[in-house]
Length: 217
Ligand SMILES: C[S@@+](CC[C@H](N)C(=O)[O-])C[C@H]1O[C@@H](n2cnc3c(N)ncnc32)[C@H](O)[C@@H]1O
Image 1 (cartoon, protein in one colour):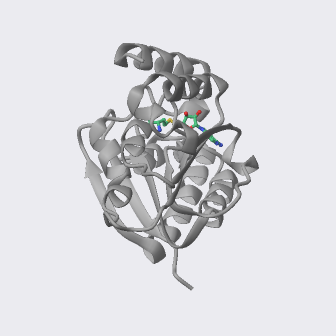
Image 2: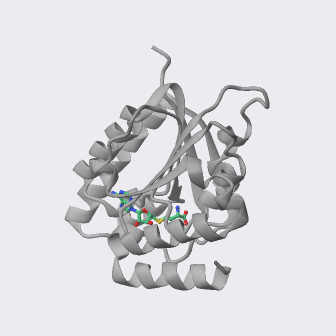
């Protein structure tokens, strides 16, 4: 798929389904590199891994993930939007790099909250637009993230820089309460489990990538 078609698909879905798409453009390759930092850094002679990508959209981050999927790894993608899921399936069929790992990869068309897997993952990589969601859904999603991780496994997710603090200042009262609650949920998880945060400026808009590790015990 050409980048132009990818942008057109993404922007079309942004207009139709703003709350769940949550961005006007796919993520940049710089953001994709950060999201895959720990997957890319695993030892060359390490055991096979299981990777779960949540909210892949048109595949801006998926394109980097597939390059690092090795023989015997498992790759599952969970995407709520059927139009995006169809694009992803087509890319697995037609793109040479994606096709190499097509037999190890499955696109699941479902919300994360309804996805059940056949085992936990070493890496959970999420592009969900959490700042658009109700606060209790964000709590629920974080529980799902960690339920799907192996002990010692790594969650990498992104959020746009300063969105909550800006929207908390200018939003209506109910919006401020929602964002404060999301801020508390993310703050609690990050204060206990964050191992790294990347600042990604070449992205529309600039983003932070948060990397959290599930405790071993
Ligand atoms: C901000 S876009 C990110 C797309 C892509 N990962 C990127 O970085 O360009 C968010 C994606 O999450 C998907 N999504 C939103 N809510 C979801 C849910 N509950 N479960 C699975 N996917 C969801 C949307 O359909 C959309 O593809």
